[in-house]
Image (cartoon, rainbow over all chains, first blue to last red; front, side, top):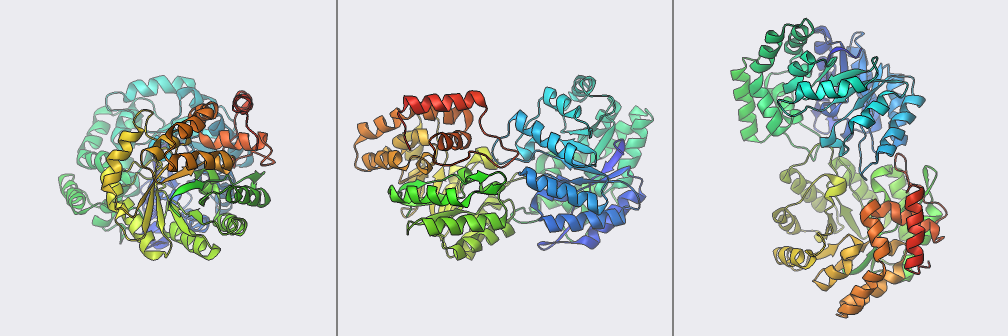
Amino acid sequence: MFDGLSAFPLTPMDGESVDLKSLGKLVSRAAEAGADSLGVLGSTGNYAYLSREERRTVLETAVGAANGVPVLAGVGAVRTRDVLAHAGDAHSAGASALLLAPVSYQKLSDAEVFGLFETVASESDLPVVVYDNPGTTGFSFSDDLLARIARIPGVASIKIPPPPSGEVAARISKLKPGLPEQVSLGISGDWVAAEALLAGCNVWYSVIAGVLPRHARTLVDHAIAGRRDLALADSEALEPLWSLFRTYGSLRVTAALAEDLGVVPSSALPLPLRGLDSRGREKVAEAIGQCNLEA
Amino acid sequence: MFDGLSAFPLTPMDGESVDLKSLGKLVSRAAEAGADSLGVLGSTGNYAYLSREERRTVLETAVGAANGVPVLAGVGAVRTRDVLAHAGDAHSAGASALLLAPVSYQKLSDAEVFGLFETVASESDLPVVVYDNPGTTGFSFSDDLLARIARIPGVASIKIPPPPSGEVAARISKLKPGLPEQVSLGISGDWVAAEALLAGCNVWYSVIAGVLPRHARTLVDHAIAGRRDLALADSEALEPLWSLFRTYGSLRVTAALAEDLGVVPSSALPLPLRGLDSRGREKVAEAIGQCNLEA
């Protein structure tokens, strides 16, 4: 479950409500295209903006549409009490694992973050994916803390943010030996995914696979089979998109992309978030042309 | 309402529940000591960790205990929909103003933050205090954005974070001329409060005034009357505390201080937050001695 391709679909919005029908379609498309797992309610899935009830409904819809492909459920919240409530809901909804980021308001200490993972891993029967995303959570893991958390029973995978270009292989060779063998290492930041998989990452926690699952599947298959040049070429072919991800953030670009390709009816985000401005939308349309993309 | 001393009480916890009785006592102590307003559910009041229901109960309790002193209600949340719900609850509970920070998960753009303040100011009848706290929200206001938001009808005050030591007066002379005259400028970061009030800030949004309201009132009275040396001496007398604020953060230090002085029965914070470790607690006890503090 923590290897290969994990597709992170958007949670499409219809105004201020979740568009469950479009969500179900995104999930079944990714499952049919061969995703090994589905990361529902990740950052791309807007988990931080949704109520408990909305999050529960999203998970139920996703599990129903996933056709047996395991669903990893984002359960992050600033308060441990709420994380545990989300974890219970994820279990009831039929999710297969928890994805947990140390979302913060007050700056968290290492001891506080360790305690959070220890509590959640011991109170839930589901395996836990550690979600390291300093840009959204405000918390930066040290390698030592990641290694200590990876040893907590129940922790199954670590999802890391993209290292700077040119430092991907070095980052992974530094981090991986410190992790227990049974804990998988996963990469976020789609533009470095091919490089990271070739350098020993076990799984790509992929934003683009929520919209273009077949493209992502092909890239992963090449990387797993050691077809280095083909994997890198697949990634290079999407560079116009990656460039927009780095400039505008993957959420806003992916939302616009999904709408332009007709995969979702609306690319609205929950306010105060707004989609790309008109210049950004033009660039997405250009990238679609440059990459010859179809849904 | 947006001048003088605004006291920001803790929201004391009893395990994972809000200790409403202790909250009421903190509020009435500050009101009796002459606070001009009460900032309830600020960062010190743990607003970001509480449910809507908890926040509503806290506000009702605070307004009941404030004996007519205006209550500013923290209404921040990552989603505009939730901010508006909190604003409605604040109005119903009898709060006099809203305190709004652009709490974020995805990084917010200037346009998104402007839009948030525009929406809240136009949909609520209560005046709005702009709460600039990049350390907790992850969003940094430019001076230009603050000036533009200050011109939105309904915006009444700006609460700024502490400038670096030695730059307080310069910061305030730079910012203030860009603000409309009717918009007050308030300082956070208790260790620079005296300097900031002397340099032209209208109000001290004060953490320590939640626990030591008489100390804070005296300092403000000296500053307002232009008794520069006395105001600075009052601040200097609390330097052992300020030093701990800068090292450990004001929330954790104030919680420990309130417990040590017997003002609250417990200094517990909502998990995953933990209080000071034993070394930090020792330092708070030392500071209480050095400053000759009594409740």
